[in-house]
Length: 205
Image (cartoon, rainbow, N blue to C red; front, side):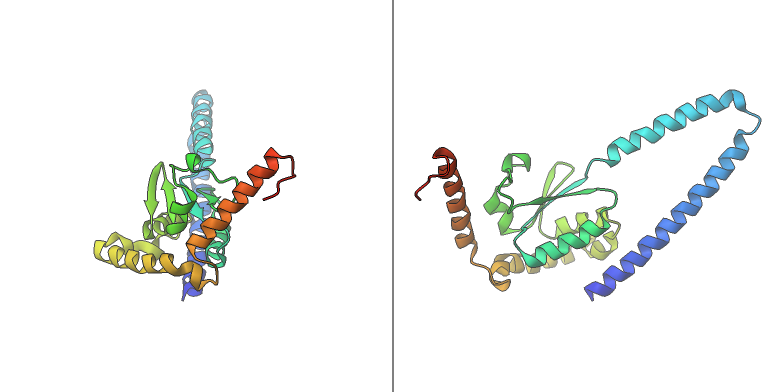
């Protein structure tokens, strides 16, 4: 079912792209005709067009959504890779919680344990959790219709309850240790690294 939805989404995306290109070509042709014989105004039009074109390019390079994910979760990585394949505009920045360099200070104070408990996203500075994160992520890549049901409060609540169950047991379901064990292992690695740095690699832990 998910594959069918994604295939349909890709088809819709291609049609939308084709339509946009055609519209842009028509607009460009009409613009050239309207400017014929108006050379006096042409320079100001060009200046205005150039200025307005440069503004979006600056904003388009920035992301709308920071998506925090568990890089050691196979299913999570599969979903992230799918979103990356459609993230042509760079609207989403993917942040791996499992990265040793992950910083809570750079992500609205969301520490590793909190981020591992349930999915988190930061949309234009606002912290989101649960199904709302997926809705924003899919909207950012042009597939907002997949999660359009979340606009209905009752369905959103139900979806979040189902997701909460998945989030609680996802580690065990994917054959990994419990969150408590994962946190202990991460802490030990951090302490080992700190010890090695302090003793120039001669740590005896």
